[in-house]
Structures are given as C-alpha cells and as structure tokens.
Image 1 (tube, one colour):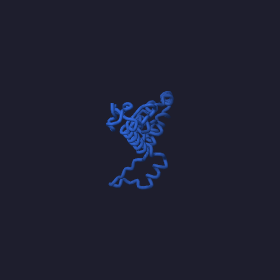
Image 2: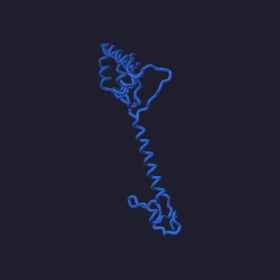
Image 3: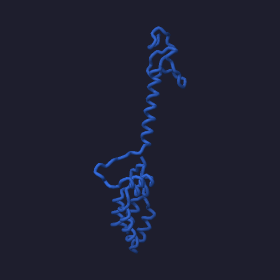
Length: 160
C-alpha cells in the first residue's frame, strides 16, 4: 500500500482521523495514534474555534437602546460595580412572591413559595396575632419594589 499523498512512497500505517494510508513524512503521532497532517490541522483549527467561543462567553454583552431608555453611563457603571455583569435566571417570580405576601402573608404563603418553610410555619403559627399579616404586606411590597437582579440574587437563581 502506498501513501495517499505521496503515491511513490510506502505507507507505514493509516490515519486514525480519516482512515487513509500515510507514509513516514505524512505521519504525525499524537498519544500513540497516527494522524495525517490534514487531520492534525483540522484538530488544531477545531480546538482554536472552541477556545474562541469560550473566550467570547466571558465577554460582557452590550445592548444599545436607540430610543434612549434612560439609565445612561452612570447606571451601567453602577451595574458593573454591583456585580450585575453576570446573567441570572430567576427560579422564583418576584411578582408572585409579592402578591402572595400582600394577600396571604399572614399565613406565610410567600415564605413557603420562596422555599423558607420554617419561616412559613412561624407565620402560620402566629397568624392569629395579625403581626404576620402586617409583615407579609411590607415584605410583599418590598419584593415588588426590588429589582429583578436583586430578587434573583437573594431568593435563588441560576447563573448562565
């Protein structure tokens, strides 16, 4: 058998990547396996593309609002300083938590929703005093007034 690149040369083996016969000049050994130069180049280029994609994920996304949504440079610098460069996917909805706090806060429904069952039981045990109702209304309003990022940061979110 002869090399697929150099027809006059005897093949010493086959390329693991493409299965073609290769001579000693065309052979590149990587971790005990023979590759032709074409397959090695494809592997290197493929790995470089993977590295570029990983590097691109670390760069922050910049969104421009042609309509002028307010904010300006001061809000973007404050967002960067408060660590809002990371994107968070909220697991709990702040509107749901706020409404539960306002309407059923005396029974601790918002605490159960937010995954705090011990506090929910405490609210439920003390509901006859009406103190949990007042606190629930205050907490519900604070949930609704907080930013999506701050709420997700405090009450559970997944970063992506």
